[in-house]
Structures are given as C-alpha cells and as structure tokens.
Length: 347
Image 1: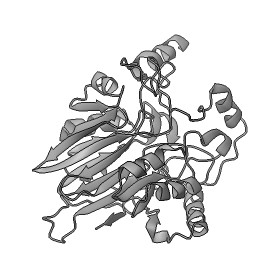
Image 2 (image 1 turned 120 degrees about the horizontal axis):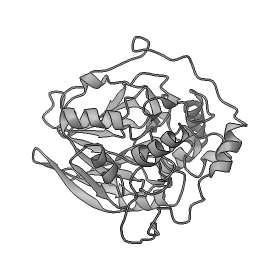
Image 3 (image 1 turned 180 degrees about the vertical axis):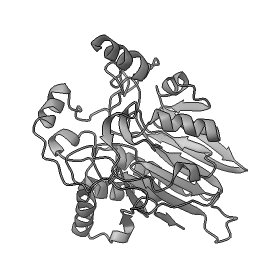
C-alpha cells in the first residue's frame, strides 16, 4: 500500500520536471522567487497542523442555498446592452472574463475537493456560482500554477473535451496537461507575452511574476513555475490583471509600472492565517489593499476566499478584514469589492 501510494504520488500526480535555461528565477532544477522569503518546509507544515486555530465556516451549502447564474453566451461591443466587459466570480480563483466577444476562464475548479483524485484535500463549502453545464463557449483558459485549488485536472479534461480552448500556462505546466491528454497548451516565462486573436479581436496575454511555489506530489516541489496574467486589449488598451496566488513582494509595483491602464484587478484575500506560515505565499486582506494601490487598479475584485477552507481564517474573516483595511487606507469599498459566487461586475 505504501509503495503504491508513493508510485502514484511520484509518477501519476506529480508534474514532470521542467528542463530549460537557467535564469534569475530558475537554477536549472527548481524555480524560486528572487529575494522572497522561503515558503515553509515540512516541519513548518507539521507545526501548523498540530497547533491550528481554525476560524468558523458555515455548514456546506447546496445549489438551492446560494445564487447561481447562467452567463450570456457573449459580452462585447456588439452586446445589446452596450456592455463591453463582464467579470463573473465563479468561485475561489475561477473568474469568467467576458470581454469584446471573447470568453476567458482563470484557474477553473468545479471539483468537490481541492485535492488528490477529488478525495483528499479541502472540501467545497459553497457551490460554484456558474453551473459547469451552463458555461458559454470557453475560448481561452489561463492557469497560474499547479496547486489543486487552481489546477483541477478533472475540470480541465472536461473543459478541453467540451470547448477545445487555447490554454496558457507558466513554464513546466504544459507537460503535465499533455500527459493527461489535454492539447492546445502554450507555456511562457515571466514577462513573456503572446497575442491571442478571437474573431478579429486581438488580446496580448502577459505572463507576470508572483511570489509562490508549486507541486502536486512528493517529487515535484518547485519543478514548474507560477505566475499571474495581464490581459491587454489591442483595441482599447485596457488591461485586466489576474494575480493568481502570491505573497506580497516588489513584483507588484513592477507590474504596476509596466501596465498603466489596469481597469480591473483580481486579487486574492483568503487563506492568509496564520501569518507566520502563510505570508510568504499568500497575501492577506491588508496586503491585498497594498497591491490594489501598487498596481493603481481602477477597480479590484477579491478572490481566493469563501469556497475551500485552506487555512485558519474563517469564511467571513477575509471579507471583514478587507473592509477594515480599505477604511484604514481611506479607500471606498466600491473600489475593491468582494462579491458572492455567481455575481459580476461589468462596464
């Protein structure tokens, strides 16, 4: 049994190691974030798990307890309502971005468990805000890294089979998806970009830095890269920023200096306690407000909260702390919103 488990973790779950040129964030074997504090090792994880102080979560809800929405097939310049862009918070880090007739999903997860084989890991406490069966045609998927709460292989297989979208990932993640029969995958390094053309509209997809780590099994820690994304419209020049997972670092200001027209940023606020363990890899609400300011976003949307209990913060705590941090920074709550699964903003 132990041997079987080891073989499964090493060869079935684990991401194949990336092979490529050495850079300022790749030493030839593993990736890292320059100048960032090291994420906790196994001993730190054990210390946390044996001394947890878990916040309160409501009992698991069903589809009848929460709002679920059926998206329109396309949103864009030709929309009858005159709306150019709509961003729907599906759940956790899954955002449905509908802009100029193009449909984009970020880190799609419809699994009941964010973990191994949909069995071992954090259990879903709230349904997705968009039923999988009611998704519109998905043209593009952006995957920030390979952790189970961001890359659910079962969801990815279903999406690939149904929609055959283009999939963009950071270095080292293409091989894992292809090993699982998923095609049309492109991978990029930090600060690289690629054009994506859909029905005559061009978007420049930029892979940008984050401060995090990667791994799905016992043998692949930091063998693949992590990132955020900026989606830049060639038609309007507007930019949408999806931060992925990240601790707080200087990279946010660099992103804000390079991209000066971020009309909406999707920023994580949850899974932040205890800070001594989580801060190298997860920003909290107070730091999320700093990110909002660093990148000079016109509007920010909270994500990475309310679906999977991944840390010690309670279900409502990230939202309450975000409101408090906005007040302390004298920022109107409307500028950085935490909306429910199935709700959206549009302009």
